[in-house]
Length: 236
Image 1 (cartoon, rainbow, N blue to C red):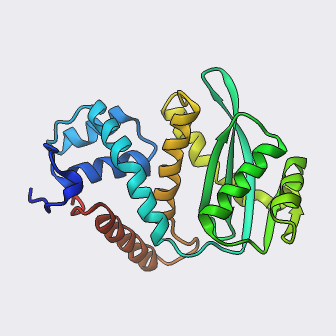
Image 2: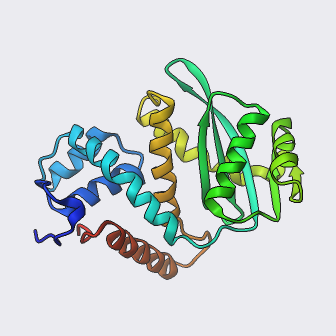
């Protein structure tokens, strides 16, 4: 297996395409570390699940940052929602923002559901996106209104449960991963994992109701982009 000599993978025993493929499997699909280990073993690649975990920690956020830089500018309509998650027996809140196209803009794991927590999310979004939305859509949680009035007073705010299905639906992949991982071990782990997971999902997200040919083309482009981002050849 010929690997490009990328400085990112210096001093690693395995070539770039193996490492990038393992990281892709882990963040792209609802697989545990041991499942990824078995899938690699089926290809004759003997890697421990702990090694896969270390690869995910070392390379995942860098890959996610590059995906974010490649992603088109966010839409002008932001859907915000929060969902409860249990971490080490304590209730936490996963705050997520998506645009009207379904792309995840950012996530933030917090222990509160207060106006202060909502302000923190909005500040993070504005810093990362560099633009202000035309419309912000949320459920009827009062914290959103209080935060919006201080952080983005000129933005139209629509509060209605039925309008926010896009943000609510975006939590479903997180719930699947939460079950596979037998819950997150800490707020930091959840933040680190989901920050990468959602950006990888953005890269491979395809428009709904497209033809099979268009779907295959979009998938091929996403795989090519992943190869360029990771500096490796996709494993066939």
